[in-house]
Image (cartoon, rainbow, N blue to C red; front, side, top):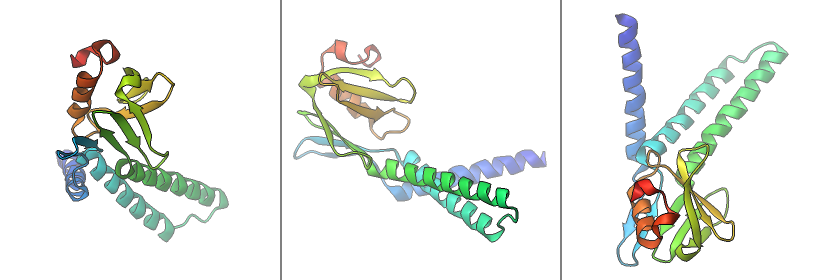
Amino acid sequence: MLPELVLFGAYAVFFGFVAVFGWMAGRGSHEDHEVQVRILGFSRRARGASILFVVVSIVVTVMLLRELPKQEDELLAARCFLIAFNGLAGYTLAETFGSKWTLTCEGIESVSWRHGPRFIPWAEVEKVAPHPWFDGWIVRSSDTMTIYVPGELKLDSFEWFTEACQEFLSPERYPSKWR
């Protein structure tokens, strides 16, 4: 009985931190009614989880640095682990806070910290299809430019994306489950 309570408490604390950090991170999506623009961003849950991931990576780094392994091969493994863990934490933080998708009546634009702005006019969208490996969608233009849009679990106001596809694209160019 006691181990189950401890596990439940650990889950409650973890998801509590995700909720608090998500609240601190603010809302990822917003609408500008004057110029009729909708800007999509990652959800509070995704942004809060990325902050929590960075906090955990800092705690793990401090713990490992306090008790460095003595043997050379263990020290090398610890360094590799820290580089990979902190690199992944930094990547998720940069991805969740540094990526936006803008929906206008002209088209869709993606801005990411990994690449410059990408814009596809609605008239040039060839197909919106599910991503083969990730929870998300690929917007493909006729000139082979692509924009990745995360799925509804990761993105705030995902319904704005589906509404824009329905409004500006013919039904054969977006998934039938959105109709």
